[in-house]
Image (cartoon, rainbow, N blue to C red; front, side, top):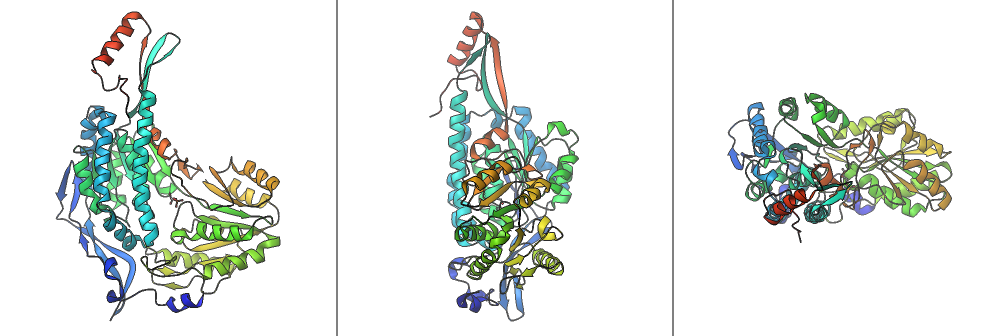
Length: 542
Ligand code: G3H
C-alpha cells in the first residue's frame, strides 16, 4: 500500500458529519409496489435495507440504515402474476397488440422520466452496493444508452420485416411476436443495468413483465416505479419484493410464466426451471456462473497484462460475472508478473464510493468477508501465500484485495467463483494446463490471453473459441460493447444477450403465408392498403 493509502487504511469508514453534503442520503421507507398500473400501498411486514457502508459512531461502527421495502407474501405475488397474465391476455392485450411505433413511444416516455431520476439512482447505487461514483454513473448512463440502442435496433428489425417475401409459390410476411409473461430476476452487482438488459427488450417486444428486485440495489429502483407506471399500459410491468424462496416458487409452479430471464447462479436457475410444470413452454434466458481465466504467457507484455488483470480482477471489487477470477502465468515470468501485480494492487485506493480516485470499496453481501477469508485460509493451508502487504485485510464489510500464489487444483480458489477481491494465480509450464482447466471447468464464459507472439496467440484462439464464448486478446474480460453478443457455454448461460440478440431472445417468429394466387395477392394488398392489420403491414418506421 502506498503511503497515502496507508494513512486511509483502517480509517475506511467515516462519521456521519465527515460525509460530504452532496452524498448524504435520506432514509427511504418504500411502502408501495407496482401492480396493474397502480402503486399499491403496503402496510404489512417490511425488510430493512442496510448499506455496506458503516458509520463511525460513539458506539463504534454501525451499518448505515438506508430504509425498508415491502416484504410481500404469496397472495400478493400471485395477484402480481395474474395482473401480468391478464395484461398479456393470451396475446390480445393492449400491449402485445400495440404497434411497434406506439410501443417505442411508450419506451421513449419511460427513458425521459428515468433520466429525471439520474442523480438519486446513482446515489442509491453507491450507498446500496458500494459501487464507486464513476462506475455508478456509468451503470446509469450505459443503461440509458442501452434503451436508446434497443429502440434503434427494433426500428431496424421492423423495417426488415415490413415487406413480403416470396418462395416456391408462397408469399409470406415474417415478423417477430411476443412470447407472453416474462419473469425477470437480476443480480446485485448491476442491479439496474443487468435487469434492464432483459427487461427492456422483453418489454419492447410486447411481452408483459413481473420483475423481482435484487436483494441489494432494490431501493435504486424505487425512483423509477412512477416512470413505469406513467409510461406503459396498466399491468404491463409489475414489481415483486420479498423472499425469493417464498414468492417465486408458486409463481413458477403456476405454469403461467412463459419466459424466465434470470441472472445469477446456475444452481438457482436449475431449481427455478424445474418448478415449471410444462418445461417445454418455458423459454429461459440465463446469465450464470463464470470463472474466467487469464493466461499470461512468457511472450506477454507484462505491463499490459498487469494493468488489464487488475481491471479484470478488481473492478467493482471483483464482483462482476465477467471478472478475471483465475490467472495462469507461465513459470519463467511468474516472479516478475506477481511482483508487478502486487505493486499495482498496493496503489489501489481503498475508501467510500464517492471518494476521489477510490478503487476498492465495502462489499454488500454480509457473509462475503467471511467467505473470502475461508478461501484464503484454505489456500494458505495448502501451500499458497498472500503476496501483497495487507492482502485480505478486513474491516467489517471492507476487504483489501489479496494476491494469492501459487494456487493449484486442490484449492477452493481454483474452482469456486470467489466474486470478490482475491486474485488467485496458478503457475504453469505447459500451455495445455490452462486449456485443460477450461476443458474440465463447469462454466465457459470468457478467457483473456496475454501474449505478443502471433503463432502462440493463434493456437490459443483456436483452442479456446470452442470452449468459451469470447476470447479476449491482451485485455480484460468484459460484456461490452453492448452491441456484441454476450453469452456462455456449459453452466455459464442460456440464450444470447446483446442489443440486437436480446430482441430475438424475447420473441418468436410468426408468419402469415398464402399461395401466390391472383386472388390472394389482391386480398393481401387490400388488407395492407386499408391498414386493417397491425401484423400484416408494409408501413416503414423511420
Ligand atoms: O456481471 C456481469 C456484467 O454483465 C458484466 O458487465 O463486463 O461490462 O462489467 P461488464
